[in-house]
Length: 79
Image 1 (spheres, rainbow, N blue to C red):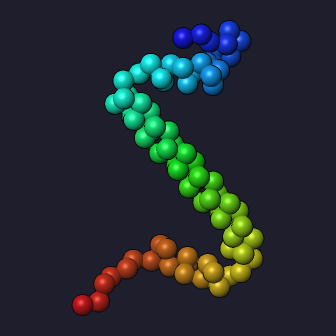
Image 2 (image 1 turned 60 degrees about the horizontal axis):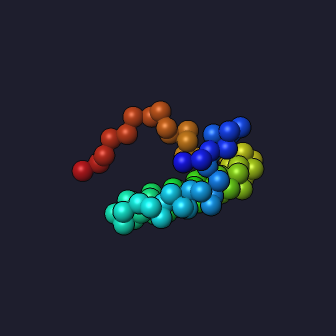
């Protein structure tokens, strides 16, 4: 596996060639892990953008945080 001596990272073309040499089960495993990683990164990015977009609202609109005053109050379910 040739590596870039400065970074220790394989080039994309070299990585693809190495994957081509793997048995089908290992190729499928790599694809599944890669897709999972991409989806997680997308989800994390969406959550981060949403949180940033709402930060000003939650910082300035007391109606959005009114119930946080109850966070430390004991809660008992009525039956």
